[in-house]
Length: 157
Ligand SMILES: Cc1cc2nc3c(=O)[nH]c(=O)nc-3n(C[C@H](O)[C@H](O)[C@H](O)COP(=O)(O)O)c2cc1C
Image (cartoon, rainbow, N blue to C red; front, side):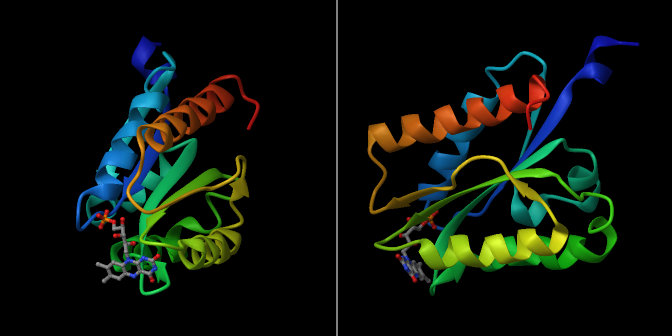
């Protein structure tokens, strides 16, 4: 078997209108890519497919909070994949990271409800950044990415 076929995919999907979540998601992906046996599939939610979801060993979802909930394009990804994926991704490790002007809890709660519908498994505490992310916040997101990847690689999650 070729080496690349042994690698495990982590799917990182995000949406960003103003660029803040893009920076956070890039930090997350950079952290996850530090683990040698992991392939990071990094996509805007609008461009992520059912096949991406079915091929991953874990999913990370990065959303800004818009109007008290997740970005519409994150919801769109769930709308497009739920029926076909719900019986095939049971127990999938998932993690959520959110940016917001001053709150972000609504987005996390709503994503958690949808993840419960898929029967995904939360493996780390979700991360919420309210206000412009500091260097420390970005480092924390990067560390979260590496933690998820290490857990997947070692078979802990
Ligand atoms: C249409 C819109 C609605 C928003 N609603 C909320 C909200 O309900 N709660 C909050 O804390 N921030 C809210 N914000 C602020 C954004 O969550 C925040 O600026 C975030 O960092 C934007 O991420 P982005 O730059 O990746 O798009 C809103 C921003 C926009 C553009």
